[in-house]
Length: 88
Image 1: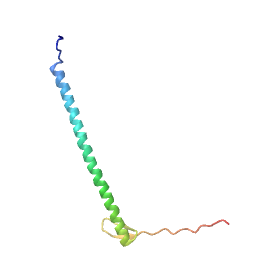
Image 2: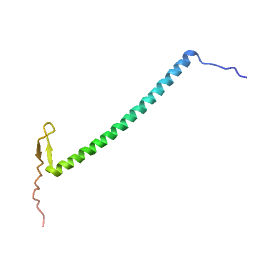
Image 3: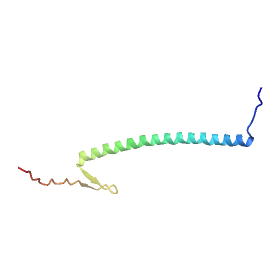
Image 4: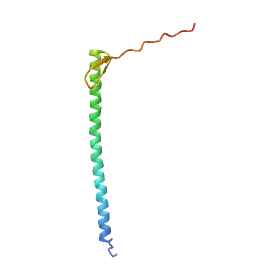
């Protein structure tokens, strides 16, 4: 039977510490990815809600620009089409 060989206690401690750090990093990454996923869901919902509100406001007021600091709005001026010259 072959003799059992061992690394030093210091080497074993070093390897265990490194493994623990690596495992901790994986756990942190998983948590961060989970929070990122939650934030993306919130962002998509908020974006959709904003678009829905814009559509409602446009139906009520037409195309407007809103000053978000006080709620005042101005109508969006439509650009007048320049007459074009057609060649005969």
